[in-house]
Image 1 (tube, rainbow, N blue to C red):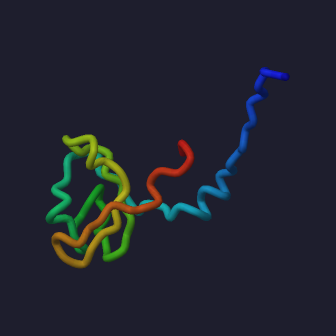
Image 2: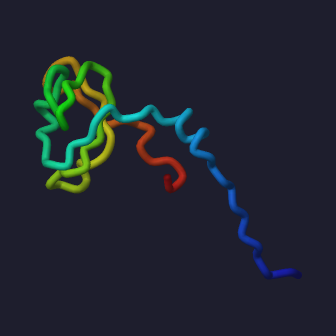
Length: 88
């Protein structure tokens, strides 16, 4: 019985990632109140619109960091579902 294991790499190209993930329009490196974040707010010098994707990289609570889709009104902004894929 052969007990040696050969690692198998499954490369993922940048193109494949780009096709799967939508890009974020802007990033915030300071804490943002997600409950009040909505279309029309300015983040990183960019005014965000409904359904824009943003990266919250400066959250005080690190569990809140990540990508979000902007809602039309306060309370409607939600974390994106495609944030974590295969260690990317």
